[in-house]
Length: 166
Image (cartoon, one colour):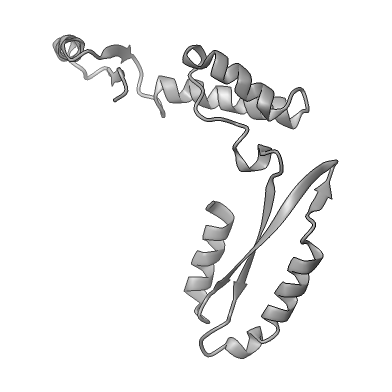
């Protein structure tokens, strides 16, 4: 359990309620922080987000590598309260992987349009099997092909998942 609790106090919060929360939380071993204004996000998350943005910037601007950021973070972790380990993040891994999404019509009434998919995908995978280089950085390539079952709504959901998901 996280020992820190952030309690939001607004203009409508009775001071007695805030004081009661402070004593109750202290009794169960929690550290209480009173937040005076209702804003999006907790203080801790906002600080973590700022640290994350700076860590990514350091690596993207070639100031240092992801391993250096992680070493500093691990050495001063409790002090920095960093949200994640950067080195294992997909884009900053030693050899990152570029994922290419492919939405197919393999089954269903439109399956005839996908007859060449296996040939095209195998040729593409073979051509990219050695990976690609971009701006001096080597990337492995993974092709993720998913069947939409000839359903437009399913194809949209698959595409969104390929773009936004892991």
